[in-house]
Length: 417
Image (cartoon, rainbow, N blue to C red; front, side):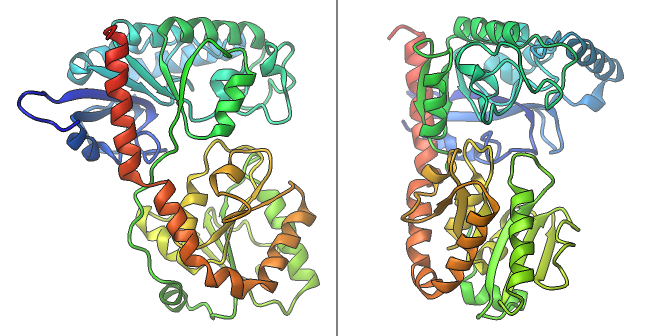
């Protein structure tokens, strides 16, 4: 739909915990792209690190911050992760909330909004809700991992000390309350992968939700060529280059990556190997004397393409992943992702045609890296195919077109058309 005098611009307000963290997922970076489809897109966040007029900042009111922190502490002590927060009224005072024809929920939990707030915000407003992870399907955890209790009601949660840590196991009741609140809102739920959709179908939400699969779109900047990137970073062309996100995380497979690289450094000391590690520095200490390591620290937005372009493989053997933006970004620069079974990633990187899928263990990752070196000429010759796939399947304009169409359809659904 195009905007015109006869079809006035409709307004969508995106609501999420933060505007800076996850901004590529929450439509913050894509706001301008919806205007050609008849939608004015704006954002509201509790933690605001970016200067714009639609933020509720914890810094704006000491009383608000103290009240929110106290509510969170009480909720966790009682095991009620759905919370006692009362922040909906603050959002409802915003002009963009009052003017919104539709709300798009993103991360609306995590010590900010309660179930009461969700329902209050959604009263008389159509809601599209992107489920960025399985949290809303469980009574406690973000990712259930090997646990299948979310399928039957989350009785006796085995991980109450993990994120989000609670003092009392109230998981069963939490999940019951989530389901009741969400089904009463009747949102159109969007997931970014069939893996997530299958999780919903296995959960207690089965046949209770309207759901749609829309993979995220990515705005791919013009990336340097493989040769240009190697020259700018001073990496010899004969080097096998592997990159990964260096972060201490139980979910992201960092321990697995470090062990595999340490084994390769010890057993194959003559292998010409360079490692590019994003985000945290010092994680590669165990082998930085035997393998060439480039630690980038935090890399801003488009600058990361230089490093992706220099890679042969991007290591992302996560134990939990509902989409995997970095794997797709790496593919758009020609690097092959190596991912683990059991997450959304094998589907999203189109393994084994484009990406590479392995079992989640050190030997499998080590063997995939060594096999990649043995077949390096073949992988490099097909970099263009990898780039073409990412740009075709995760095109940002296609995503915005589909999402705007979904907004229009939800408006019609709620109007009974």
